[in-house]
Image 1: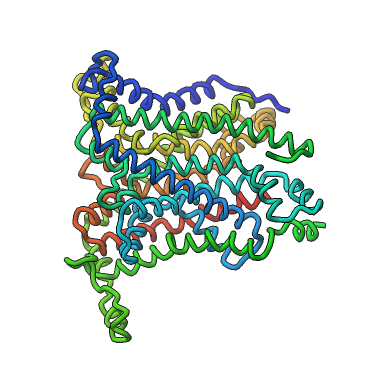
Image 2: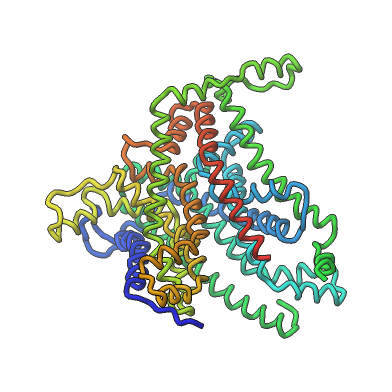
Length: 274
Length: 310
């Protein structure tokens, strides 16, 4: 193997890149603990904005709506996205496969204003009253495509001889799927769910189009506050959101790493996956 | 042998196989394809003070007569409005300009980062990869909001610059094109770094050594060897950034000025402000027309990459 040389230029560009990515977030987090009302003045450490947040019932309610929408849509999206990935990788050729894959990849890059507007018009045409359910359906449609891509790449690179072995030994197809395939793609399904969850929690544009009275999501709430100017409470709620997501990502990646290495070892040794 | 294998590994049963395809297929048809048809139909309608706020409304009870009236009432007026008003034309041009320029900036910024990542010792690479992906998981809105803290008039950037004596008076960063470009580059950086890293990581370093042995200067070797080999990554990253940037709403709305408006904002204002759903639909259709070629190219590349994995 050729040893790759790491020049000072390489090191500097990585360092600058990571600084650029993380410094603004770090500043936001630090300033959420700032006692001063002014953003540019440091008034010492304090939790007063977190306390203010606890009394902001509109914000808390919006957070609750967002969490429910994210839970529901991520779960639906994971089921649909996994099915779509199976359809693309395992179902062989079927009529309209090209159109199907086009519909899966298009939402990944399609501007959100277009998706939001078109879904809203669908709900209006179907005379569906807008609110929690319409937002959840819209988020499901967007995020299932991300789940599909993640699960699809996992399905493409795992060892199919394990499935074949199970079938050769007389295991029925459905059971093979649940005892061999599903455990092997489980880490991808878990990260798909998490991505769907965070994308839903994060979405402002599509939610603005598809939601209705009584179902204001957290990003919509934050957005309307931000438009009025910077407020320290917003720093606090943003820090809490970052902490939640970071915690989920780190825990899940540790779990899936441990899980997938045991799975592969088990499979290699011929034992049943768990 | 291959035929035997594929026969054996074919998906479970016909019924199960059909369900696997049918359920997500139907879902996407209902929630992705049909909505576009409705947007198209609405872009041919007129706005009205009614519920829903547009005309004509399709009335199946009126029979053939109703269908004929319905089609007779459709018109291209909204598109004529879009082309005759400079506000719309200039916001399209602005969006394309921002899309192209920021994609270019992203390439220049992301390339050295991706190149460096690809040369770091192998065992450290997953960690760096994680570090680049992680900001993508933290909310988009939050990351833009973080920049407002920094860029506003009494914000941190002006503080730092003044402390070092680089500027006398505070500079207005916010509500400017500069702020929009900063926000876009910041938000889309992971989307550019990852495809570039994917191709650079696979590059055979011995090619560069060969070029050096044959007396090729390093900058020339970069242009003649590295860039051509990285071309698939450059194309993928550029499309992945360019397409959504053109339709971007949040970044120009929070960081940009009210003078230069991008198409996503125009659509938003038409819909939420003026309640003109037909014009908003026509704007969406035109935006789609502009983006359809890059979207198809992107899909083609995406499916080629995934098919190769088989």
